[in-house]
Image (cartoon, rainbow, N blue to C red):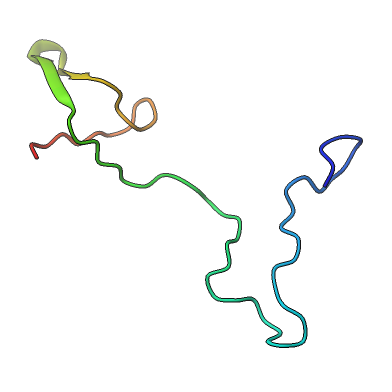
Length: 76
């Protein structure tokens, strides 16, 4: 729908199924839902330094995930 002027239907799915035949929604139809939160493996990351007294591991580059989330490091 319109993105302005008080429209309440910005991200509605529209038509999802067929008419009288087969009168159901096709298996595997893309529908709205939660996205993300999946496990991600980033190869090629490099450990720069380990500061034991502060319990820190410095990694070169970006690390996926939210702030404060758990990160697993393993040798590939």
